[in-house]
Length: 288
Image (cartoon, rainbow, N blue to C red; front, side):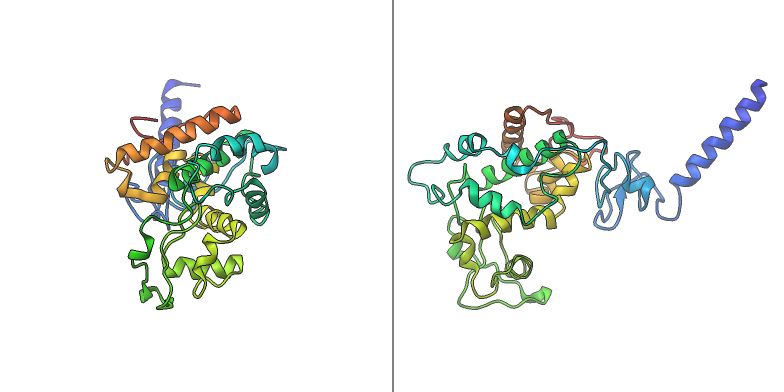
C-alpha cells in the first residue's frame, strides 16, 4: 500500500475517534462536572455510554467490567484472625469491645450479596480491605459506636422532604457513622428499622449497625468505585471529598490509605493504583 494511502486512512481513523470523543455528551476534555450524571472516561472526557462508563472509567457511575470471576466468599476473606487483628487494637474501655463482632458482620453482609463477591478474588479482597480501612478509621479501631459529642449536634434537615422526630438525634452511629434524618429514614426503609423514631437502635443492635455501614457503602457507590478500578482514593472522595481531598486534611486522608495498604498486605493482594485524592488530576494523585 502506498504511503499516501496510509496517511489518508490514518487521518480518517483519527477523525472517527475524535468525532466519538466530541459527541453531544462530551464537549471538552474536562471531568469537573456533575459526576452523578456523567462518567469521566479513561481519556478524561465526560459523557455516558460504554465509551465513557466502560473499561478504565475514572469517576462517576462507571460500569463494572470484570476481567475474571472469583470463588472466594466474604467469610473466606474476613476470617476470625483477620477480624480479631483489627478489633484487638481498640482500648479496653471502648464501647465497641464486644459490640462489633464477626458473626454480626457476616450476618449483615449476607443482606448485600454484591459486597465482597464481585469480579476476581483480588477485586473482592481489595473491596473488603477498602471497607475495613474506612470503618477502622471512622471508629478508631472499632472503639466508638456513636459520634463523639453527638448529642450536642443537630443533624435534622427537613428540606429534602424527610421529617425529624424532635425528641430524637440523628448524629453519627455505627461503623460508617450513619448521620442525618434523611439517611436514617432511607436506611431504615431498606434495612427495615424505624430510622425516624428509633435511630438509637443503630448503636444497640450490632447487625443493624453493620447493615447501615454496608448500606452506605453500596448506596453511595463506594462498591462501584473500588470494583470498577477507580482506586481507593475515589472512596475517600465519596466519604469526605474536600474535607480530606484536594489538599484538605491530608493527614486524615493518608491515615485511611495506610489502613488500606495494611489490610491489602494482610489479605495478600496489591492495593492497586490511585490510592489518594490529593488532587483532581485525571490520572491519579501524587501519592498513588
